[in-house]
Image 1 (cartoon, rainbow, N blue to C red):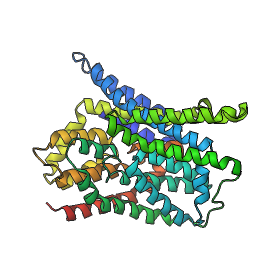
Image 2 (cartoon, rainbow, N blue to C red):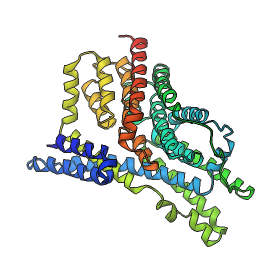
Image 3 (cartoon, helix red, strand yellow):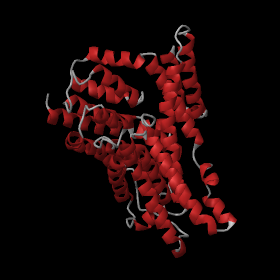
Image 4 (cartoon, rainbow, N blue to C red):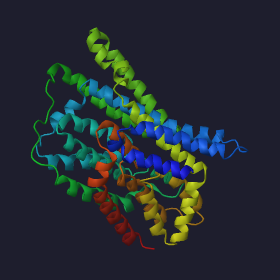
Length: 417
């Protein structure tokens, strides 16, 4: 029953454009129904503890997302992104796409795929005017950010899970997965760049003044440093990433309050936190909540573990298992899939830096790009732009699959048995 409800909800989300019903409403109903079925069919066992445990993990992701979005909005309100936009000299859309993809790929390894997606798309929306070009750029950013997070222990949550579980080391994951990750991005970039025609109408924002340039630079630098501080905060304190993000958000908020004190009331309103929080896409955050609740129910019901066992029965080759798990992560969140894999194949089965773990880091990190709702970065992109499930599936998924399989084959050949 849970699987049926999940698949029906997934189908309705995919058909949002045609049925004209918000994906956020569908996701919330799906998530709650999955847990309701689970509770009603387990009257003896109190599953409240499991539900609250999943809600804690989900809450951490949502607060991280809210914090990152707020920092980006504060930078934008103070025209911080105008500095970057004015520094872009190319007018060729294909060249710009290559620049944005490479920046997203490397920035994701330093920050993480979710934060990188939010920042990169916020910049692109200031430059690109055509709606179709916006969603092409956003799609490429999602692919680049997910792939960029693979080869860094702090770039993607699944890679971090392997790193913290001592399944991989920093040197090994960088050395072995970097090229494969880059290949998985280049193929979609080359394919989708063909759809980008002509030159940009404008490469810089209008209305930026000399008077605001120093303040814009200040908030741009402060915002980037605040985002970079998040993984450092986690390494120093051991606290979850959302705590570092909330701390960084609070510091940027304080900076804004102090600097904007001398402005008149109308100007202060435009940069006030009350105004900026209203600009955050709340329906997308609720969509994320619903999807993760549903996946949490699948995990608690043992469905994900059973799925992993089925894969193991289908093929004994660990390379094929990693490939199938990666494809599955486009439908089912890669975090519980990774947790299930870590339980099934511990260090007694595969030692630290075994090819299985390295290939798993690649597949679960890049596999989420196969569908737009397969990763946190993709869900964020849906909220920031007008990408819908079917458009992405028709125009992007095939090329992402080719890139994904190319990188996987490269790893299969280079890592050996």
